[in-house]
Image (cartoon, rainbow, N blue to C red):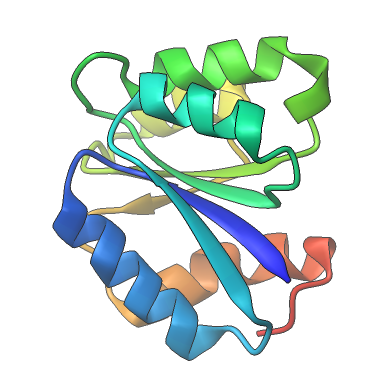
Length: 130
């Protein structure tokens, strides 16, 4: 079973992503959810087999940038792929996010097609069938 983490302070965004992914993926998926970077770091410690994280940039307590930096500093989590989910579509923000260690990004608001196009190459590298 593939395990994905959804990190977003919006329960609605997490639910929408889950619905899109469930329709898109043929593999059986287990989800771990967190409302901010602090919760996500704690969840990572208890779920070392996460394959992919969908990470919001703007969150309270600990934003996605800080979470990603902290996660990438821990060698045991370097193999986890991260897709940033953001409203910040400016090129400079995308470049900054990728330099922090993200493997892709999705701009809000998104459609199922945008999600599919954004993550299909990442999923293929993980051996997850779309």
